[in-house]
Image (cartoon, rainbow, N blue to C red; front, side):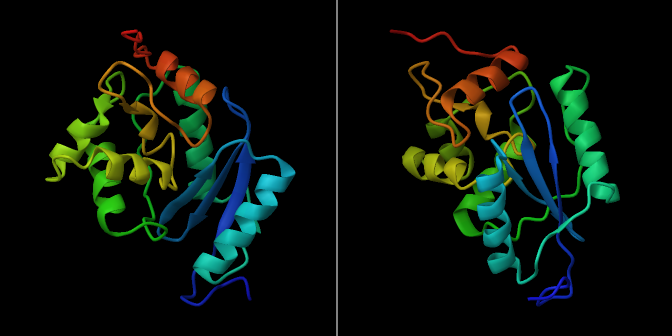
Length: 184
C-alpha cells in the first residue's frame, strides 16, 4: 500500500489528549473520518491497520495537518466548555446505509445539552420499532464525540451502552449537563 491509496487520497492521523483520555483522530481530504477512544499504542496500531485496509492507504502521522489541527482546537474548546457544536467537514466513507442515515440525523438533530431515546431516534428516521438497530448504528459510529452518540439514552432513564465505555459516556453527558438520573 502506498501513502495515496486506491482513490488518490491521503489519510493523516494524530493523537490528542482530552478530558476523557487520548483520542486518535484520522482525516482524509474529504474530512474527519475516524475518532477512536482510549488511543493506547495497541489500539492505535489496530486502528491504523483497519484504516489502511478500509481506505486503501497507509495513514501518515501529521498533527500539523490543517484539518486535524482544527479538529484538535475544536475538541479542546468542547472539553473546556467553550464550544457546543463542531464545525468540521466529515468523511462518511466508513459507514453506509441505515447507520449513516441514523448518524446524520443524530448529528443534525440532537444538539448539545439534550438527549434522545433509541426508539425516538428510530422514529425520526422512519423506523418505528427500530431501537435495537439504532443501538447498532451507535456502536458503529466512526466519529464519536463529533457525531454525538453519547446523547442517545434508554427510555427508562438509563444511559445505555457506549463503545468508549460507560464512564466515558457519563463524563460526556455530565460535561453537557444532561446526565440522566435513573428511574430505578
